[in-house]
Image (cartoon, rainbow, N blue to C red; front, side, top):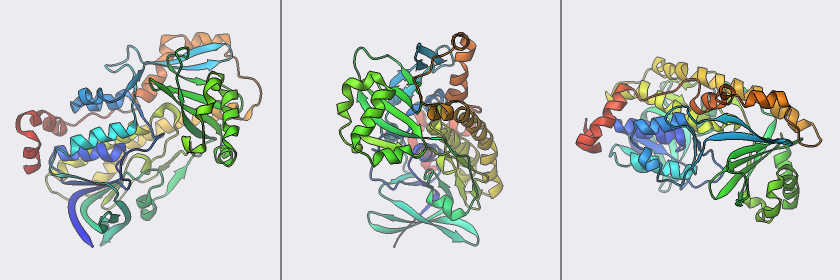
Length: 422
């Protein structure tokens, strides 16, 4: 068995894992990230990058590189009712980044990986899956993994599990999970755009199903929201069944449904909302989806994961950089900082699920008409600012600590190698 030693072993190369790996590497911590896939190229992953994340990228000096990616900006969010399109969120005039940036997640992760690889104390092992925690005297001391060269033993001072909503390491810890549930599943697919299509990201209100149209510049990333369990049931039917549902839910797409050739072009997200009551055990911390699976409402998942990573780097990074042990009370401080904004965001999502989505998915009939009084309320600037503030910026914004900011500024003078040597 191959053996490697590191200070921090991060399991999972998603947004939380890659951002945390980059931030720790910048202050000289030896970091090993394990990603079970051979690349980041998996479609229909969360790719709504909110202002809270853009602010972190700005602090890191990565906005110029981010803007070189195939991004599309959405300044407003709207819903189409039977009586027309109505804005429900307007980012314009709010903060330095008054928009949501839509970017393929694989491009975003590749950007973070490329930046992190500049540091000799950073290691990314692709096609390497963590199979079990290594324990020593009741404390996590690393992981057993399998990679291209066979079994791998990773010894680490700290393990951070970022391995998603189906986290293998979370199951091993035995930490209790509170499951809130969700009334819907989501079928994702791509559709080409026409010059006559709407020019914004929007939803289409319906009865029995909802549709979300995410403007990706030259195509739509579309989502058909259906009652819980119907997604898997539909997948057992011929693709024509999905075409019929889409034609009914989103008439604007009727002239291009032939593009849905097979079910291979469709992704199923079985929506879950859950959270851990405790995010840590001695030697291991769980963040991102491993600690709290979010509903797709508001597209907050990737952004909350990155906020978790920033808080983790702020609180644990200096101790790791000094080579000192990470005690469990320090891990508890990460949870104390991030648990409240997680719960608050989930409460908003759950309220929307119960009061808006669940009734809409259960009631048959024609698409609803927005009452005139509600249209007038939505037209006010204050109301249209609520969604950008709640979902775009979140209940608690994380910024780089002075130690991390110092490493960013210092880099221009002495380069990444000097940070690794400190």
